[in-house]
Length: 367
Image 1 (cartoon, helix red, strand yellow):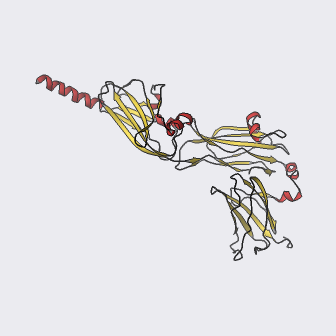
Image 2: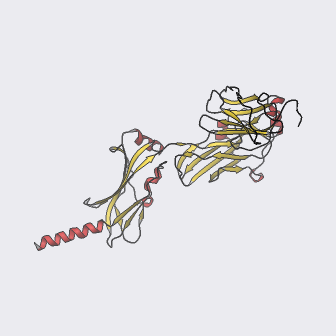
Image 3: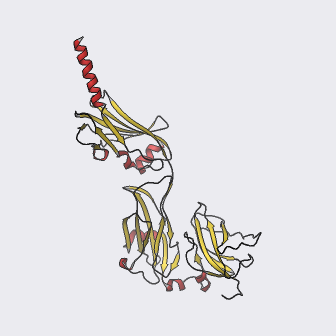
């Protein structure tokens, strides 16, 4: 009886000791999952004894479908300092499930949209006791970053301010950084090939900003030359997507080399309202880059002087082709007032907004 009591006391003491391992996982927030976030976990030994065991991470979808399982080699937890997941000795063998989510995680480091259970379990050396911490996480979709200014195919005569839009995430994520690359294109060279082969005149390896002014310290833009640029977004070592490759030409000679004298009046619509000055004489000449393959332009006219448009105005249907469109909008029958300012507002298929502000004059009216 005495022996059994001693044994029982020993087991209770042992249980309290291992039970004082605290798991502090930093579960990914609903929205985006970056594979390195798996190892944002801390183990703390609050007892006075050294505790031996190993940590295991599992991701399960739909309750039972294994996505991933990864374990450490044996650990020793003292009561002096915590152990962080990124500094633990992890097994090189990762067990993946046989489903789409597992394959996506294996190949691209990203989980598809859906609900997942993340579990962190600490097993003692003899597997007699374990401590577990689990949480359900919803992974949502995202859109890659997009270039904004200068518009694709535009012709500029001043030092460019390169502007891009961050990736569209369902919920904010900290630590987003960008890699920017700008190259000068050779004659008849494709933008994609130029970005791969040409030495960059501007390359920023890492910045948290979403715009960059091309200053004289970076170099000189050459008259009549065409440039290509692209931006990558990332968090730590994980990619959040890459923009399309855009081009622009620089200098007055590039402007004069456009299709015809009338083309000098075309203005590219911009993602930023109230930008630039443009005077329209009855007709608005503008450019729109149809990157989404839309068939018709969705647009409206908005007065900027507080006046109202003529009632029952039927804006003409504007059909689009893929790529860059040069469009002429005849405003002579809309009842616009001479000298007043208006905005041409465009909405693309993804809900993106574009603008062109202009001051209107009838063709026969002089400013």
